[in-house]
Length: 244
Image (cartoon, rainbow, N blue to C red; front, side):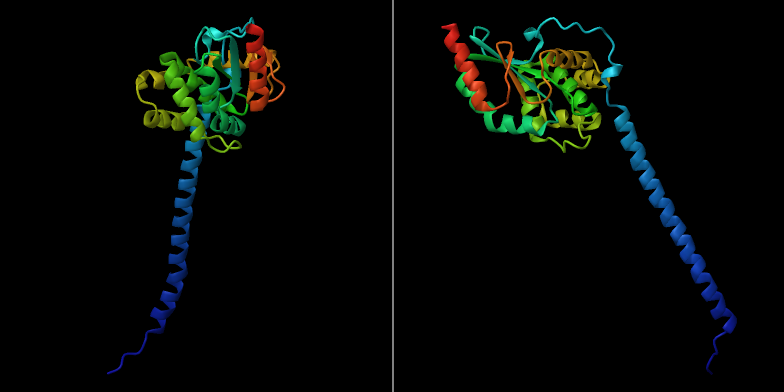
């Protein structure tokens, strides 16, 4: 015996379907809002961890280049002193390092002609300051490890227009890439912004000598007009000639 469909049941199913679809849609919207809000909150927390120069306390007196406070390579008896002013977020600094630094060290530093110094000019964004303070924290533990940090951070450099050198990024980066330091002390120094004063001091000193971008070079206290390798080596060769 054939059964006939109940018209009331069919009508009820038709009414139930839109309701179910509505519930599913509300749930999907809720999940989307939760995920988006959670991600935004996480990003906001990371931005809150970034330092500002205005937060750094202490009076800075510009009274010389303070070579003794900077990461360095080469002999103290070298006839010429060269300072590189750089920002770890600067793409041009990364390119200069990749193209010229090893050759420069081989030809001028390892031969005893030049003592090379690194000085922060962290100006691009707040994560520039944080990356610079991380470099200072590593330098205070090991001058050698600072140069390793510099090379590897440039190799892992993010987009200049975005904030990428966050506290989370730097802590993970150093843990994975820089061995032979007291990581717990480094982490504490980074979170406490222990060396932000040093970064701000570098910035103020560099600015007082006319630095307004990166990379910039100074040879025996004279800021060069451009960042070309030819200009740098010509200034060094002139300095070496005078020292004879």
